Length: 183
Figure 1 (cartoon, rainbow, N blue to C red):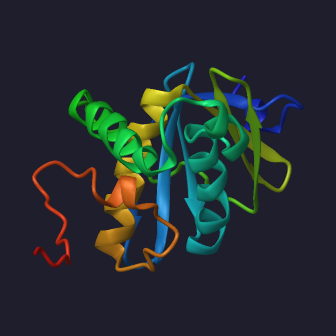
Figure 2: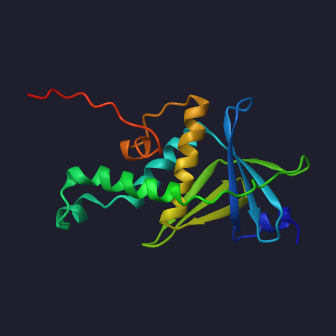
C-alpha cells in the first residue's frame, strides 16, 4: 500500500513524527509527518486554521474553571503552574533529525482538523479533502509541539494574540518585564 492509498483509506494514517517549519514564500506552516512505513507526508497549515486549533489544545492542557474551583490551588497560580510545566517539557525536548520530504511527495493543504480528546491523549486529524492523517499527542509532546509552533509563528511575525502568557513566558532564558510600583 502506498502512502497515497493509505491516506485515502477510511481511517487516517498515524503520523509517528512531525517536523514543523515556517515557509516564508508560502506564508504557511509546513508539517512534514512520518508514517509507520517511514514515508513522509507534507501538510500545509494556514494561520487562520492554526488560530482556530490552538484554543482547543490550550484548553486540554488547562484545568476547566469548574475543576479549578474544586482544586486547592488558587486561580492566580494557574499561569505559573502552566509555565513551569511548559518549561519542563521544553527542557526535555530531544534533539532529533527532521523528517525530510522528497520533491515528488504530495503537498496537502489542510482544510479541516478534527480534534478528539481523552484524559491522556489528544488526537489531531488533519484533513485535505478525502485525505487524512492523525497526530496523537500526550501532554508533554503536545507542550513540546506548542513551543515549536509558538517559535515558528513568532519567526513568521504572525499575530501572537492567541498565545497564553504561560507559553510566551515559558521560553527558557527569557524574562518578562513587570510594571509595578513598590512603596
